[in-house]
Image (cartoon, rainbow, N blue to C red; front, side):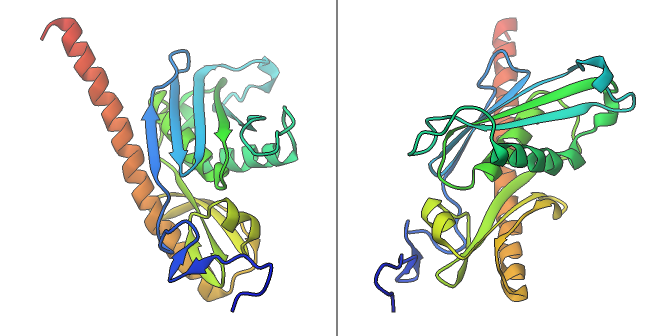
Length: 249
């Protein structure tokens, strides 16, 4: 029975937003949205709206920061001041720096950096609107933008969060669940191999709850991967169609 002042997360077997426990929010992916970037992606996850841009590979500056054996990947995650209800102070903060580091490390296993010694690959992720899960949305968008830029990669990285709310393990937490739930566990992985590239946890889960959440995340990352792949194929087919028209064929 819900106590006074408690938030009711589960009602009639459904979550506060009407989703099942294992259901993702709506996802929208657009590729190649920025002309001046080498690769770009607009990504929506529920009410999250994220823009990712990739520049490079190009010569690394300053030169003393170059790696003679492989490219250096720079990742910048930033929340726009208007992305949250209470206006955020502009500029990097401790959370943004931490998420930038974790996101770069999540993508690092798939980027073939050895192909571009002394070069830099710059990834920018801008959160235009936030509704929990921005780091996972940012990783998904960045992965697609890297592929759009033609950066050699072993595969795409897909990311989602699972958590515990109202005593239940649920997929892809929304803002209310994320802020007031019992646990939150963002995961990034190479979906086709079930290889985890990043995993964090805030809160406590039992071994059984952890395993249940991990299974939910793996299944969801497969779904996200298929959407990422379809968006990239759609972009490629659109470009090929435009080239054919230009040739008059």
